[in-house]
Amino acid sequence: MRSRDALRTTPEPLESAYQSTDPLEQIRHWVRVVRRQWVWMLLTWLVVMAGATAVLASWPRQYKSAAKFLVRNARQELLVNPTDGSAPAFRDVVSEEAINSELELLRSRDILARVVRELRLNVPEHEGEDADLVLERAVRGLGQALEMGPIRKTNLIQVAYESTDPTQAAAVLRHLADAYLAMHLSVHSSPGTYEFFKQQEAASEAKWQAAQQELSALARSANLMIPDEQRRAALTAANALEAELAGLEAQISEQAARARSTEMQSGVVDARIVTQERKVPNQPSIERLHTLIVELKNKRTQLLTKFLPTDRLVVEYDEQIATTEAALKDASALKAMEEATDLNPTWQVLQTEKANAQLALAGLTTKAGRLQAHLAQYRARAVSLSEQAPRYEALSRAVAEARAEYELYAKRAEEARVADALDQRKISNVVLAEAPIASHIPSKPRVKLSLVVAAMMATLLAIGVGLGAEWRRARAPSRVIAGSYTSVTGRVGASEA
Image 1 (cartoon, one colour):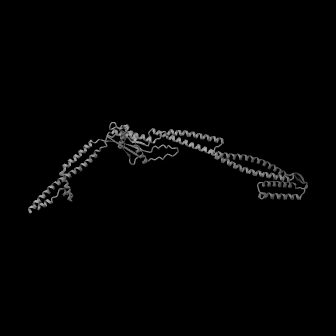
Image 2 (cartoon, helix red, strand yellow; image 1 turned 30 degrees about the vertical axis):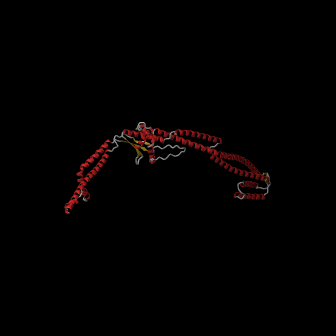
Image 3 (cartoon, helix red, strand yellow; image 1 turned 180 degrees about the vertical axis):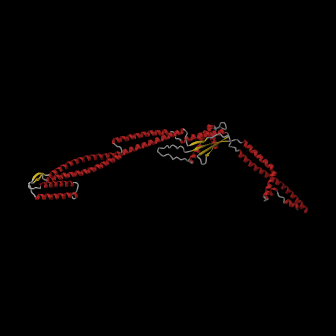
């Protein structure tokens, strides 16, 4: 019975380690496993490392060359348009679209095919192959082998190429850079624009000169300088003449009225009057009063030409005349003297006034005639300017448009000339920031990293081999013990029976 219980309670080595909860016991168990299987584990690790070393030693070396292109906004594109549109504002930051455009240009088939032809990379693998097929395969292979992309947070584009020959890797990138920069200039330039703008400049200059000549001929023939101002000046002068003429007509009417009035008064007043009376000792007073009355009446007559009879000045003269006449009447009534006749001063004054009025009327009439003639001239000038102004303005606009067109094409021609000069000197918005060089340090395979990975894999594989060997060892005794246990139990049962 004791032997049966002993056989039943004998644990397997691995199962005992798995079932144990003591960490120290588990560590001791794994240490015993390593001690028992260290030979297989070491052999496995050495074989894997030897294979990895052999593979790395026989692996072909790859050499990587890199180039960097700087994309910038140092040069603005030439605007080829018929208008004087303003150039786009300069921006220091290069947009993502511009960098992506340059990347697509780098990947273009024309550039890759040029590199393939220049370096003779389209070598046929088999004799008699189609040249186009070989070229297409070489271009596709070169495109797949090239590594290109923008460097993050910069305006740089990096292009890399790997080859078994370091010189060939650098040569591919150099030819790629030359082809790309030439293609960039060709794509962003406008050939023939300078000649086109020079032709347009000459044609617009001839058009401008013809318009100027036509405008000058019209200005000379119609005596035009600034039609609008001349027309306004003519109208202003005509208005002034009309106002002056209206004043002259009023004066003519006034002088005609004076002439008629003096003529009527001359018919009423006697030509001779009594000037002396011998019986009147105060004859001088009477004569003085008469003279004063005549003067007052004359002044009153003059005032009536400017004022109404009810005005204060006229009323004052009326009062003076009445006072003087009353005094004259008193003087004449009181004393009588021998009288002597002479020319009537009033009649003489009336005659003088009549002659003056007639002379003034004749002068004003002549002046009015001249003013009417000048007024007719100014009106005709204003009408002529009004008729010629639209044509003059149209020609002026044509001259201004032709001049603006000439200046635009001259400016565009100069811009095109500068652009051609920049293209000839190969100045563009893309420059080779870092030229490719032949690197003699292989980029592939990475020996240290590969050895570290191989060592890790060898270690894992060695551990797996050790565990497998320990598992086989643990399973073999279990089968033996199980068989022995069956035979023993059979004999015990037989003896008991």
